[in-house]
Image (cartoon, rainbow, N blue to C red; front, side, top):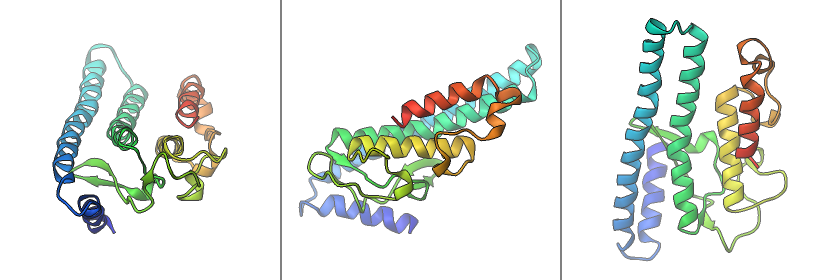
Amino acid sequence: RGASSIATDTAHIVFMEESLAKLCELREIARSLDKNVMRSWTMILIPNVLCIAGAFTMGFGVMASVVTNNVAALGALADPLLDTVLWLHANGIAHRDIKPGNILFVGGAPKLADLGLACSSEGENRPAGTPTYLPPDGATGADADLYALGKVLYECATGADPDSYPSLPRAFLSGPWKSAGPAFNRFLHKACA
């Protein structure tokens, strides 16, 4: 589906009103996405530079580098996706199917795809989307989108099955993660709240 799905979704947005009025907005979205790509690269490069400098000047170990890079990578993934979701919500649109399969990487940057279930965030109040990523309380619209994004980030960060949320894998409760794991879980739980 990939690129053809994005092209189809874009065509639907442009022609929903049977005019090209939305084309200027799409151009603004493209500019915003470009800014997000640059911000994501910065979020990845700065921690790497700090890890290298820390290894030579402050004795950073391998674990400090791994944790720093993983947190930076998760932030680089979350930042543009959250911006996209917030833009959709600010424009009265609920995506309703945020899941790993609907996140594509274009030019190294994550993009939210497949607007097939998207609807007005005000009018539609029945749950829709992939059951694993739906909030257990039956929330819909913007709340459901944020819950699903939080669950995607949980899955990316832990490597665990999304159905095991909110429990952490055993590796996050021992060793170097012993103190950071529970704090990280609280952070993700707030994201999915």
